Each structure stands twice: as structure tokens, then as C-alpha cells.
Image (cartoon, rainbow, N blue to C red):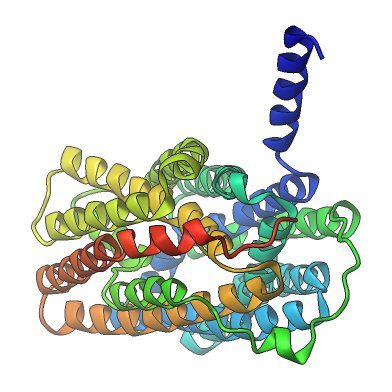
Length: 411
């Protein structure tokens, strides 16, 4: 083959190998639609709860319940999607539960009703998360896992930008009243319906044989457990998003502008996810993940003081950088480590442990805020994030040896 033709052919093959697969594209835009509805609600819910008299500990508990149900159903659906190879069915069911629960917040009046609906939303989120991550990994080659997950996070997070912007515009236009909050909750029905249509008509899942009992009991690599336990311990002390937003209000940001702030740091998260995903394929996932926890430690420690408005805006930008460094890279790292037959189980275990840690952190740190001070809560959170940085940094050299041997099957 002539040299020029060979180079052209190799270039075309390389481009095709790095193309974002169809299922990843569909999943990304499903997540965009659902994320739009979810994050219309997330930044305004703390203000709504405060308006009806829920304490900081109660807000943390509601957030923790959502995360807890998410963890439980991630565990269940991850194992079952491996067993039956029915990723699409679990993804659809999960998004359907969330699409039902979110608009019903408009009819709620107290802690119990809201906690129940957020728990149902969490169950839906958990039902689809592990199978969705496994589908992304199954649909892409190992050398582009970071790119695929980075792209998915980029498009997914775009919904988390537009949703808060719409919610913020409604609050500014109509005022931060119960009527406005309920209108925002009601509008969440539209993106939820769009997500379900995309799943039903867009995802194409290859038929694969059901897993054998031996496959179901296959051991996960030790580096997976190190990464999962290290992340879980660090998450026990991570300040959740709701408490971050309340701290921003303490810094002098008007309540009607809180969704705009949420959308701003989420926009940065979205814009950085794809290039950082590509970078993670080149230099490794753990260095970026460890750097993210160091960034979060700085943000949490800085919020233990009373930062000025410009400093607060800068800290929220760094908060977005934390998510961009850790979210997509963490999912891609697991995809690199675990073979295709065990990915649902691996994501189930990882997300479950992390979610249970978030429940603990959400309630305890909220309780520390109410009982002692926000300064103490944020300093404890910073110490936990610094621990996460140390553990992930120390495990980097060990993980490189393990990943280089290859754990993942090629799709």
C-alpha cells in the first residue's frame, strides 16, 4: 500500500475508533433532558424548604434520603443488569420514577411528603445510574473510556446549566414565593417526558447471553476496592450541594440569584468535563481524581470563613472544577478496571458505598451546622477531602501496575 494511502487509511481508522458511539450519544442527551428537570429543582429546593420551616438538619436529611435511596437501587439494578443484560429496561424504569416524582413536589406541603417524593426520585436515579454507566462502558472501547464518559458528563451537565437558569429567571421575574416554587416543580414534567421518549426509541442494546453463576461471583480487582473505599471515606465528610448553596446565601447572594450561581459553576463543570476526559485517557484517571479532592479541600476550608462575594464566586468555580476532575474520570477508571460482565456490579458497589457515605455526611454536617457552627462543619469537611486526596495519591502507582495488565474486555 502506498505510504500516502496507508496514512490516510490509518487516520480514518483512528478517527473511527475515537468516534463517540451511538448509545453514548443517546444516553448523553437523555441525561441532558432529565438533568434539566432535576436541576430546575435542586438549587431552589433549599429555599423552598427553608420557606416552609424545615431546619438545616432536615434539609441535610432530605438530601441524604435521596442519596440513600439512590444507593440502594444502584446496588439492586447494577447486579440485575449484569445478570440479565437488560441495561435499557432498568434505565427506562429509573428515569420514569424520577419523571413522576419531581412534578409532584408542586403538591407537597411538609417534610414527610417532600422526603417521600425525594426518596422516590432517588430510587429512580439509582435504578438507572449503574446500568447507564455500564452501557456507556460497554458501548465504547477501552482507550476512549475517558472521552466517552467525559462527553456524557459534558452533555448531561448542560442540562444542569439550563435548568437552574430557567428556575432563576422565574424567581427573578415572579419572586421567591411558594407559588413560583410550585410552578418550577410542575414544569419539570416536560424534560422528564422527553428523556423517556429518547430512551424508548434511541437506545439500541445488543442481545448478550445471561451471566453464569461463576461470572456473577468473579472477584473485582483489589485496586477497585482501594479506590471505592478511599472515595467512600472521603465522601463521609463532603458538604452536599444544598449546604453549599445555603452558605452562598450567608455570603450575601440573594436567594433569587442562587439558581444562577448553581448554573454558573455547573457550566464550568460541563465545559471542562470533555477535555479532562480526553486528558484522562492520556495521563491516567487517578491523578485528575486526586487533584479534584485537593481542590475540594481548599474550597471547603475557605468556606469555613466568611468569604466576600467575589471570593464566593471564585470558590464556586473551583467547586465546578472538582466535579469535572472527579465525576467522569471516576466512572471511566472503573470501566478500565473491570471486565464487561461485572461492570454493573462494580458500579452498583461503588455508587452504593458512596451514596451511604453521603447520607452520613449530609445529616451529620447539617447537624454540626445547626448545633455548633458552619465553620466547624466546613473544616471537618475539608479534612475529609484532604484525606481523600492522600489516599488516592498513594494508590496511584499501585493502580498503574494493575491497569497496565488490563482488566476490561473490549466491546
